[in-house]
Amino acid sequence: MPNRVFDPRQLFSKLRFRHLQLLVELSKQGSLRAAAQALHLTQPALSKALAEVESMFGAPLFIRYARGVVPTEQGKVVIQGAAMLLEELSHLGNEVSQHQAAVLRIGAPPFVAQGYLPSVLKVLSAHAPSVRVQLVEERVPLLVVHLLEGRLDALISSFPTELPEASGQPIRYEKLYDTGFTVIAPTNHPAANKKINNWEELARYDWILPVRSSMLRRMMEDVFRKAGVKAPVPVIESTSPFTNMQLVRAGLGISAVPRSTLAITPRLKEVGEVRIEREIEEGPVALITRADVTNTRVAILREALAQVHRHPE
Image (cartoon, rainbow, N blue to C red; front, side):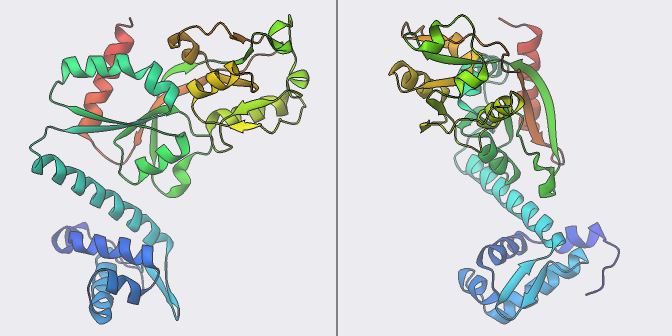
């Protein structure tokens, strides 16, 4: 099918949500036959509908093979947008059917959700009492996926180590503040009782760290690499900094946690900060949104964030 000039008027007048559902299902199933069965259509009807959609976009969206179909590069972009629109429509339908006000869906890693967000949500509640909030605490890479799929309106998070622009969907970053990190150990641990430690010494101890895909794990591996030391393999992998503090308290190893975690956690007499000759660099926390989507719920959140930073407690 030759490419031709895209006409948005044709798309707006002819494209239906069933076409979007067709694209998403076809990508998921990988074949016309399986997608037709899932959508309760005949295979010829699905083929005809797919041809109509490709005609609307003026480009082939799938490559047909004998054993199935594979999205083209244009198809991947369209499918991602289709999934996002379907998710947003479902979200809107739930709000209307339940006679609810707008629901703001925010994603954040645990240290942000439990340390920074309470003050933000307090301001949000005061200035927009009709807005309900759904908060999802997860690892940053998974939160980014949920954002790109339209399951979340915004993230308040550390920067992903691998930028997701390669997925074909632009991301907007608005820096909010810098967060510091520190190493903690049981108070009876050799590292806690030494006047100053270096990273070579610390690499010899048992560590408790988040999974490899997490921002903090990658940051710690980078710290050891810059010190010319091979990063230790953790004896325990645990994502929550609050859980990790308890694991350190139990004497299972040392760990690295955000300083904000220490600030909001009741002081544990069995846990102390480790003094290091070269401290961990601070990392930025940002409001992360889809740059190509105008979302009134995000505008409400952005105003609450501005209020918090204009009048910090």
